[in-house]
Each structure stands twice: as C-alpha cells, then as structure tokens.
Image (cartoon, rainbow, N blue to C red; front, side, top):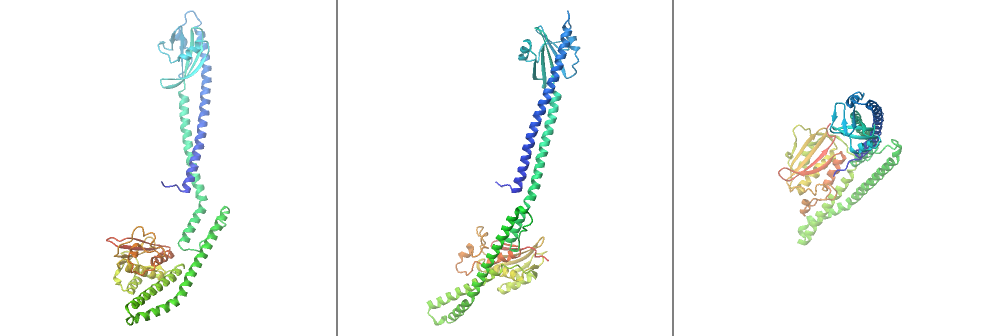
Length: 451
C-alpha cells in the first residue's frame, strides 16, 4: 500500500476537517430550521383549526343542519381539508366518506374532550392533523398539508450539502496552499541534499529565509561542512598513502622485474615464486593508481568541448582494440561538453572491464538524448551481470559474480566505482543492463553535455 505524501496528508486533513465542521453546522442548521418551520406551521394550523371549528359549531347549532354545506362554507384554501365525525359518521366537503385518515388514538383523545395534534402521511404526503372536540357526539378534524414545508426542507438540505462540499473543497485548497508554502523550506533542503549527493559540496541553505527554520538550516550547513571536511580528510589520506606507497612499489617492481628476467637461472619453484611476486606487485601498482585516481574524482569536472568519438577510438587503439568498435548513433553529435580526462578514464575502465570479465568489448556506442544528455554505452560478449549485482557492482571494492568466478583475473574492484564517480562528477550516473543477444551493456549518462 502506497503511503500518501506529507502535502497530500495535510491537504486531506484540511479537507476532512472542513467537511466535518461544515457537515456538523449543516446538520445543526437543518435541524434548527426544520423544528422552527414545523412548530410555526403547527401553531398556524392549530389557530386555523380552532377558528374553523368555531364556525362549524355555529353552523351546526340549528334544528336541521346541512353538514356538507357547513364544511363547504369554511375558507380553508387548497392546503387544508376539513373532516367532521358526527353521530358515528364521517363527513367531508363533498359528501359522507367511508374511510378516515384519522388514527384511532387521536379519535379516542378527541372523544374524551381534549384537542390533539398529530403528524401523519396521507397519499404519500406529510400532513398535520388537528382534532377539536365540538360535543359528546361531534368532533372536528382539519388536515393541513406539509408539502410546502417538506419541499422547503429538501431545498435547504441540498443547499447545505452543496455548502458543505464547497467548504470541504475550500479546506482542501487552503491545505494545499498552506502546505505548498510551509513545505517549501523542506523542498529546498531536499534539493540541496540532491545537489550534495551529486557532488556539489558548495551547496548551503540560507539561514535567513525563515526564522522558524534557522536551527534546521544551521544544523544542515554544519553537517555539510563536517561531511566535506571528512571527505577531504579521507581523500587526502588515500592520496597521501598512495603516493607514499609508490616509491617502495617502484623498488619492488624493479626487483621483481630483475627476478623475472633471470627466471631461467632458477629452479622451477623459485621461478614460479618470482613470477607470482611480479604479478602481485603489478596488481598492487594498479590498485595504488586506482586509489590515486579515486581521490582525484572528488574534484569538480572541468568541462570543455571534446570530440568523444575520436577520444573513444584513440582509447580503443591504446588497448589494442579496433577503432571500428566505436559508432555514433544517427542524429546524434559526438562533440560534448565534458571533462576529457574523466571521460577517457570512463572509456578505459569500461573497456578493461569488458576485456577481463566480459569476453571482450563488441561495441562502443555514442548517442544523445533530449534535452542535453550524452549517453556512452559499451557492450561486451560475456555472461552479463545478474540482477542482484547491478545495484552494488559500481560500489568500491565490489566485484560481480562473473568476476569472482574468474579467479585468474587481477582486478582491483575499483574500476567500475571510478566510472560511477566520474559520471557523478558530471551530474550523471552509470548503470548496466542485458545486451540483446547476450552479454552486458554498460551505460553512462552525462547531463548538460551538449553545447
């Protein structure tokens, strides 16, 4: 399950909070308005019913009253309907009626001499029923339609719902606006961290941007200062150690060379030992050279316009490879703004890696990708790189399974780490995929390479 980001969570919190508040206010307003309207309509209906009951009582106070005519004389309009229960029979405005909507409980209450009010449903419409006793044998009832009240309440409910939704939307917009401005300093921290990870150790945060974040900015800058100091100390240590090792290594290399040249004068065991010493001294020299180069990768890239295709062909010839391996993808340019020394090291290390572990390089391909990225690819004919090794193969002193399976190789485990460092100095990255048809395809992407 994917977690929502901070901005999304805060925005959702504002929206939900605004919705709950608006819904609570809407429910309270609806209930208050509903009770007020119904109570007012009930008071009006009761007054009208008592008035009409008095008119009916007067009309019935004759020797031979016409009940229907008396009921027709009432000014009830279209919203009220009179009913009269007299001597066990029901009367309406038109004639006698057989069925009555009056509940039994209300009839018993009115026959007992008490007036009553009850809300009922007649023909699917809400109705207010008022009962008034006229005599022991006569009861007057008046049905008042509540349809207009119901329609008013329905419109009110729709209006309050729309207001609640708009309030929730406004809350979401307010939350998004608030988080956009409040998270902006965190975005600046994230951007600064990305630039530092890409090798720009001059990046710092402005401590005067937000007084509330001064402590964060100051701590971040102090952390970067300490990180730069530690990196510089480690770089100097590696460089100093490597330089100090060069002199004794040169002496050992000279002595090993002498022993190797005179191996025919020694017995087999001594000759084998001399050869092993010479090989290990040579490997040690390459390791020291790689450490010195690794220390130099911490420096910024010195970009200049370089014909990378020509440089790649020269590099292939330096390794005894045909320069026909190099090709430029159609539509791409081979002149890039890069650090010549670093790109040369990238090519040398990738070619050496292909020779040692990949069965030899089969193609060196140059291409460009919009808007301004140069892409350098080296294909080999080896077994490829397993998915488990692709994440760590560019780390220092890490060798892939294919390299470990070839015990006779003399790699230092720094070649691909140097490739990644040189790429990072350009703000780019290095990666590896499977080559169509078998083998590995090492890819280096160099942003801002196009002039």
